[in-house]
Length: 381
Image (cartoon, rainbow, N blue to C red; front, side, top):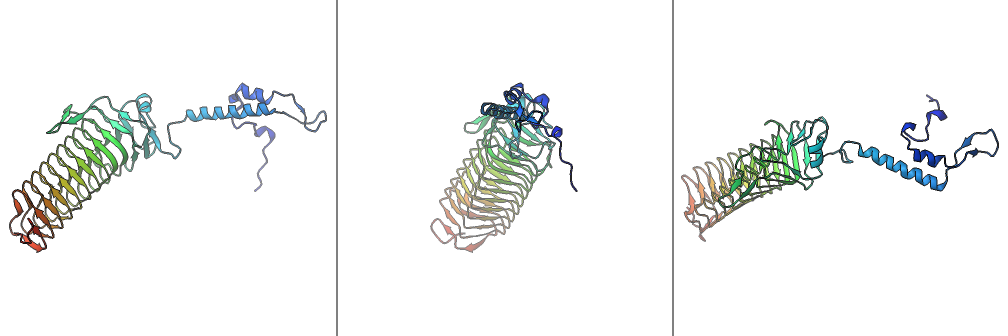
């Protein structure tokens, strides 16, 4: 169907109300007298704009557009909502958030967020960001959420030694699908990161938080992070989680702790106050390095597969596994306790066990599946 053509009156010279046209633009347009379009009198006239006037129009229109953009809510060009110290303290950063920390994400503004400055909390009882909606992504963008807590010394102690503030925290325990990546969280009065089920934490540096560096609920993925000098565990992940490629060092508790049915692979646990890696029943622990920890290098529950790990110079056993576990292909050396300390019904094979103070292999009703080396001998208990 044909549409009526717009009249000259319905098509303004500028795409905004004449009330908003600066006087300078009008002056630039009208700086030259009107003259006939075809040289005759009584015919339709049009304004003639000089080159200088045209340039002024372009510049002023650009300035007007910039001023209009400045008044819009803080949002990156790809639709990601921005979080920074200025908007957090002064106005609130987006719909659902009000001035003051913590920044509150309710989902009314969107589900994707990015830091554009550090967030500095005023005390150990204030959180940085709180999430109250499922399936939210937060990119720290290599900025830091920072509190006042400092953890140092041997044994590790944190000052202040109380506090409730969390760097990024769930609004309730069953909140699901939160993703946090690419930045640092340090000095918080409670945990660095505290998230719900099916969460994902990647490439985060959690340091000097009074409790755990990273704490997530069941079914979560924690990968490529560094947890250093946190007052409790470096990383805790609940049932059915995957914890891979992380480095945990000098944390007051365990380097990494997971609940049942988890996969723990390719991590480094170094000089932590308790066990390097502690897992529960039905888990798989593979390709990790546990070095100079204050407890066992690796400790597991029942029915666990422990394969291809290195446990070296730990204050407890190199590897301690509960009943019905398979322990294979590990290198276990210079631990204060036993190299392998296994409970009944466990089998072990292809391990290299050397110079452990309490002995090579300990436990009732064990099955030597072959190809083990104990202090340079193929004869193992």
